[in-house]
Length: 197
Image (cartoon, helix red, strand yellow):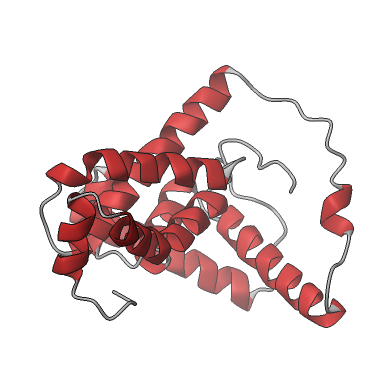
């Protein structure tokens, strides 16, 4: 834990209902969960992250395991919320009249804004080059910092399948980076287009 407190103490306090302990868990995991959801094209990643942590809060009393197991459990909940969101959006597509003008307005230091924007655009573009299964494996391995076994558990796949998807995904990214990454997006990369922010 980043707080310096032993994980077992924080977990026990959170399970006993201590708000400070749940806040420690939330602050440690929320940025990664939100990033995972955002890079999967969620229209409202913050809302899905909130739903994820409501699920964590309600199920925390029954959780047993160490810090790695908690991380895998939280990302399992996040992944399920994401799949539910894809299904819900597939049944009821949402139309927006947002012209995206807010995304073009700079704020603060122009150089920093440009570098952040370029970095974010590159990450989204590179993630968009990958099929959904490869992208899910790489994001869970890198962003969520889960082991291959934990990723297999989250996605309901075999360990061998996860290793193969990771290998193919990394090879695709390496090729894209070496070739200047083509602008096209892989078929099925995002099941739904992300709304502009």
